Image 1 (cartoon, rainbow, N blue to C red):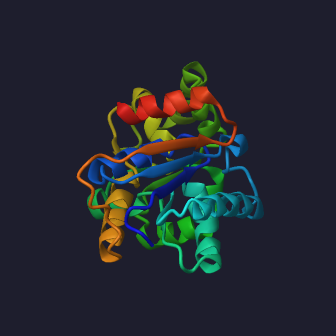
Image 2 (image 1 turned 60 degrees about the vertical axis):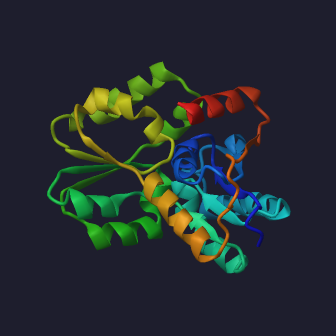
Image 3 (image 1 turned 90 degrees about the vertical axis):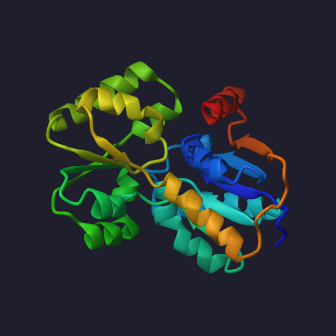
Length: 251
């Protein structure tokens, strides 16, 4: 691997921009290719085999682009496919997001906790191993079916309606919220509008730090002194997606 090669980052849509933002904060000199698979969004409602196949195709694309590391910036894709991908491509470095439930154990153990994630993530073996290892016995697991899809489309009115319908009953009953889908930090303020003041955890900042450590250990840190480039690809070739992606990235 060449330290000057790009880092590949992918998600089922533009939600992974919340992960890329955290990565760029501490690795601004790297070049990135971000692949948004919004043609197949959401992943959370698909079968394991479908998700593995979709992820495999994206990984093949990144390999063709000579990416030095591949970041799975989608909790569902991570939960369902990372073990398969690591077995199939043993020479590729994969960095995979996961819900920040361990952070609740470490910093808010006694707090009433709500984990918001896709159905696929909550039902996955990977998440359940994490959950049972760090269970604080004050946790509600909420599969937010369809939420990532309407966030992807940027439909604020529909998002507010969805959150009122599904979250209002938890107002005053939860103190900590785990954002277990990379789309959800995009609406953190809207979630807080419904739940009131809560503490949020998401895995993106910790993934970014882990990625930097892995690049350093493998002598793959780009030593350029100038900021890197970010290339965006969407599987629907939607220019509006690209515009929204870069707008979020710069805020």
